[in-house]
Length: 106
Image (cartoon, rainbow, N blue to C red):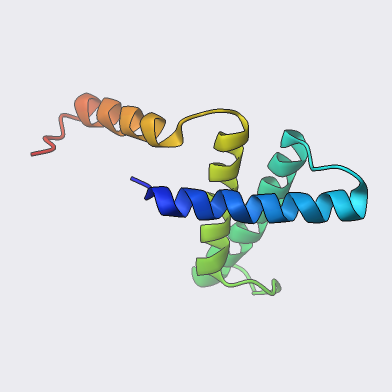
């Protein structure tokens, strides 16, 4: 799963961004604004993947690998803000799919 230290580092980075939001906008972004930011980053990721597949031209200043990681970071942030234990939920999701698809974990 996701190591605890990565989760803690992700939270610390988000707290630093919250401080910037307060400084520049007077309050932290809402969960809905976080989701909008993720949606925007998913759009950027779409273009980067299409570029890698030769189906689009690269017009973004981003790199595929870092944008993919950023999208995961946003999902971790949203799970934290929505009080979802993402590690437990990932374990449950994977176990259900393994059972459904008859995948032996041993």
